[in-house]
Amino acid sequence: MRISTSMIFDAGRNTLMRQSADMAHTQQQLATGRRILTPSDDPIGSARALEVSQSKSVNEQFQTNQGYAKDSLSVLESSLGSIGDTLQYIRTRAVEAGNGTFSDAELQSLASDVEAQFNALYGVANSKDATGEYLFAGFQSSQAAFSGGAATAGAGPAAVVYNGDEGARSMQVGPSRVMPVAEPGSKVFMADPTTGQSQMFATISNFITELRKPPTDPTRNVSAAVQTAIGGMDAAIDNVSTIRASVGSRMVELDAQVDLSAEHDLEYSDTLSRLQDLDYNEAISRFSQQQTVLQAAQQSYVRVTGLSLFDLLR
Image (cartoon, rainbow, N blue to C red; front, side):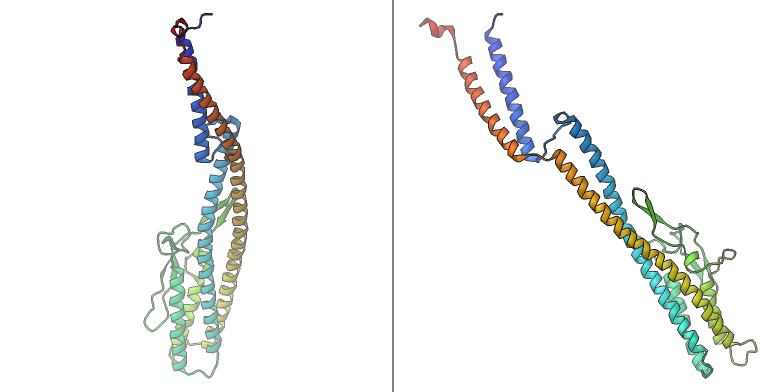
């Protein structure tokens, strides 16, 4: 085989280009801290890293949802606590109203106090969460959960009607867990399924109306109204307490889910590190070797390409 001068030049040039490319690849690995820069560096490792990265992204979305769910449940739990406290206060006032020594003026004052609590309770029933949605409206969260409730002259507040639905908004907080983060107002405030009127508000309103009746009204029966109010408040308190306990259980479960997702995130990060991260000691040693080889090849190339037959004819 005849070896021409151009073949010598081409072979030397190709060798230098290949060695320069290898060294540049190592430099890029050192700069990024990644062993796998392209799938061709490690096809199997690259495919596995892609799978783990996708799983990590899904887990991160669950963690985001968990944060939203925790906020929603915290607001719900706080609201239920406020409702329970208000109901307990009204019950206490109802017990006081059963004192036969109360004057008519004192009963009127008590009625005004209970009405203020009614209005506070109505405000909580139509409260919004951090995103501006009505907390107790079910899936109809863009509209107020309840309507009515305006005080009638000489009597108690008007009937309060539930405008939402029975839906309980939920969030997916894990691969197989969709957690309710809200409760419909019909359940919390005991809405009558046939009329939509809230039994809780109706009981309080009727109690206020009875307290405001003049002593001369033959239909006035404070004692019976007190017993009805106490019974209604007991039922409402039990209902809210049961719902609040359920919310508390969900918050405990969510905390466990948060911890589990955090562990998964660490596992995914460790796996990706093993698959992708560069061994700096090996890479630096390889880079030094490549640099030495490239310098030697450059010097050899200069010497070989400098040879000429005319040098032998002197």
